[in-house]
Image (cartoon, rainbow, N blue to C red; front, side, top):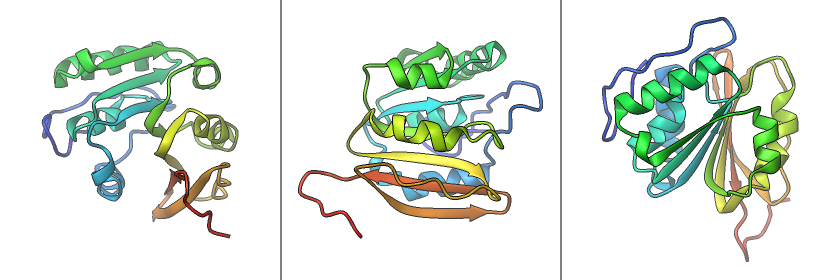
Length: 186
């Protein structure tokens, strides 16, 4: 696992051990970031269920201004901190050891880009997506990764589905916040 492009290009990232962590493949990560490449510069990013932190780190490497990484696993938090030190993004990042649902429910921060990659087969995405949408800045983006056999998540209020990408056993849906004056597609 590595950073694909940007200022930390080629840096190796570690992943916490265990079956509950499944890092996003480089192929999927490259495709996702290609789809949002023009919206990353100076973005404030939230990486929920962060695992290794690789998605938020990729955003920082591609020009995001700041990132918050949230995971409830102490192994994951240690791994994220190590990866941030190795990529030298620790000064523009905050790592929060907390349940992702609690964090999104109680944070007063808002974000330009939110990455959701919850554990598969738990139904978390359907529940956390509407909460995440309320913490999004106008015109912001939510990237959702989920298992291909799961139904596509419902589009949150004041958002539109840009596209769903299918990569074997993984689907990625990208939602974009509707800006003032923009019509909602029926």
